[in-house]
Length: 210
Image 1 (cartoon, rainbow, N blue to C red):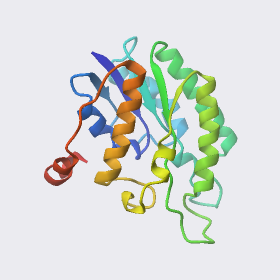
Image 2 (image 1 turned 45 degrees about the vertical axis):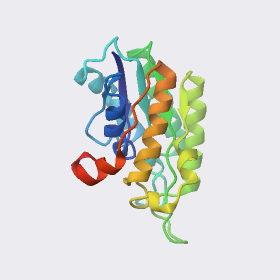
Image 3 (image 1 turned 90 degrees about the horizontal axis):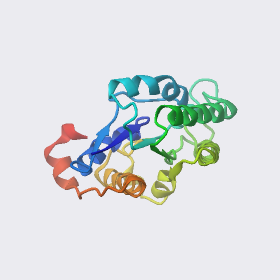
Image 4 (image 1 turned 180 degrees about the horizontal axis):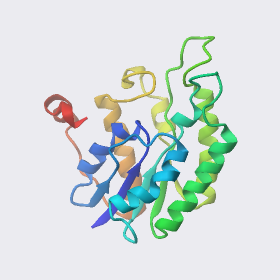
């Protein structure tokens, strides 16, 4: 059976369980329970996750993202990770993925749009930053032969009600559209097909499933 690793921040935590459920019987889907946070966190822990899930030499696809923690302005009005360092970390993550799993398809998911803080605010997350950091990541991943899953473009046209807060999409409709695109992208890359999920049942009867 195919093996798939999902790595990413709290945006990934909004769809990982559903991707696993959709691909049941087609692929084994692994992901860390923790929020994978910054690009440097991903770089630091790729070896840890490889060992934890016993994936050496047997991974078919890694779908990952990093960006929202890097581009956030939380303390002094500056991006937590300057964009030039972010570019370097993304490059190093790509190289490490290639070293650990040379046969795996690498898919990078762009960071999703946010609801910006009030006009004049200097702290928070801003769509201009999201777009700048996405552009750097996309250019770098493509240079490494990776595939882009443009979740930013997917969610850009969605109603504000798809948000559960200013950053996250922990709602039924958002979970459905994001999961379907992630599963489709993985399926195209490694030749598997996900099954349709009953999101009404998942959100009504299994609230702890979210």
